Length: 318
Image 1 (tube, rainbow, N blue to C red):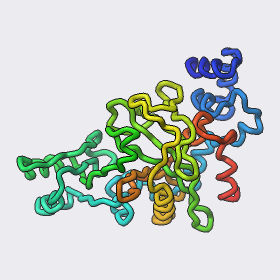
Image 2 (tube, rainbow, N blue to C red; image 1 turned 180 degrees about the vertical axis):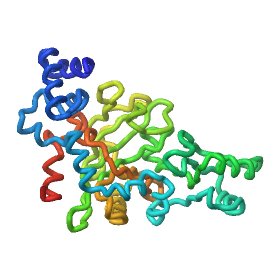
Image 3 (cartoon, rainbow, N blue to C red; image 1 turned 120 degrees about the vertical axis):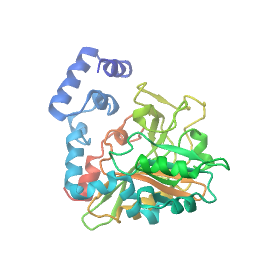
Image 4 (cartoon, rainbow, N blue to C red; image 1 turned 135 degrees about the vertical axis):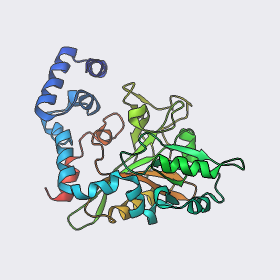
């Protein structure tokens, strides 16, 4: 909290004790945390503008109002998710626990790598990795390993060469959040670009990755932000690549893919889709029924000076 207060002091010039006190009031009254206070630039926001921001409480309200709890598991269980959205995944997958060894051998044919992950939210926790195959691979042993750890497998995603320029060690996904209105029309609420750094194999912000809000045509026009360092980057901190001006390939197709996916399971109307871009186009990695509310409202990575709450209220007629 103090580190964020000092950061706010540096760019605002306001007294750190005043900032800490204002932070505390926002935590108590609005359930806006100290990091969100910094990200949303609340130190210079009048009360009227502060009210336009989606808070933690409002985010929870949207989640409960729009997403039927009986259907949330369809998104949390990655295998169930793949089954429901198989026509939009853009890759093969196989449920090892309900497949024979012969099915596995057939899946591996003409593949030199595949990705494995838990079949549910409990079993096989922590096992997410690529398995590489060559002429020396013992397929029977690999099959038994997968079955023992309750894993399922899917064709590995090879990202577009332009996306790999951002960070080649990780799949740099786009988070596109959609909202189904009362007439089942899908709306894109925002799109974020997430980027790995260093030797990270993932692009997750919680693991140290950076992110920014994309423009309406899929371009990086604002710096990227790191929650870990509490700072922005116009150049990639590892590679030095100029981030401003980067254009996501197949961006319009990615938006249309998410709008289509939004209508597959209408009991879950508010979803953040993680999209990877391949040389052939966008593919769905997963769907998140509780999208983050802070990142798209980050003052440092968006051109907007207000929050997203009015956008939700307009679409939902609240």
